[in-house]
Image (tube, rainbow, N blue to C red; front, side, top):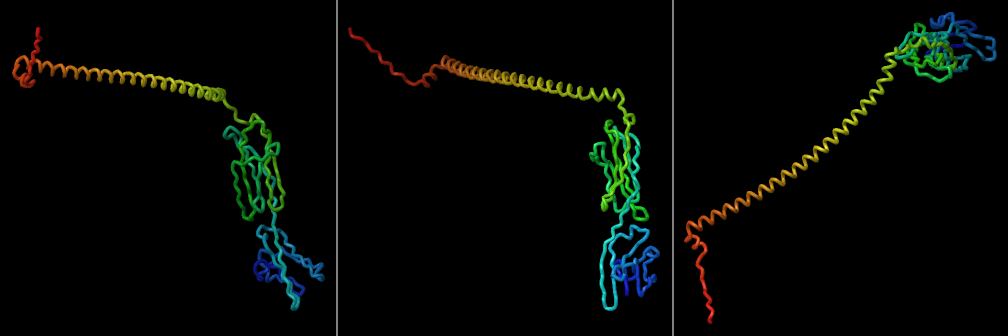
Length: 280
């Protein structure tokens, strides 16, 4: 009887049992002294592989090959390695953006965990930043930060969950109100005054604009009236000029008639005069 546990190839194998003995020569180095077979039910065809001191690298698929004479059978199993890390450490790092920056960190997780912040009522809070890294053993270390700006929040909780098993570990931190950065009196006064000044400035600009528009309309009306007066004056001057031109022509013709009566006669032509006499 030959039993062989292996990963992707038959040799070297994870564990080999043949002719009633363990065959260490064909075993992979990383599994030596960490594996054994439970042969309590071997007569019933049941052989279990036990892996001690589990590692992240042990995660994945395994194959079992059974051979007894001409009978060969194989089976496949998926091994999920789950690493539950340490309870998260949550602490304040200092004031930031009008609030308090808090940091949550934990290590020893596999696979990559999920981080979630919550307030006292259990409402989820988005992380400001999150970073994850793996150590030499392949385990994940996670670090997440949050900025709390509400003084009345009281405390916040950081929970880290393994996505495969759903198991989580959480820690909370209390945030006393005196730790929140206080606004200086002149900043508080400025914060209340600036909006009022802004409204006053907007109102002043609006009324100034309306007054400017009214003045522009008045100036436009005055310019239109001036244009009309100028047009009427030009028409009057044009008529007077035409009249003076006609008068000058008339005076010139009259003067010629007085100086040169013959010429006037030539221009007028002959006139026949008939005298009607009444008989008594």
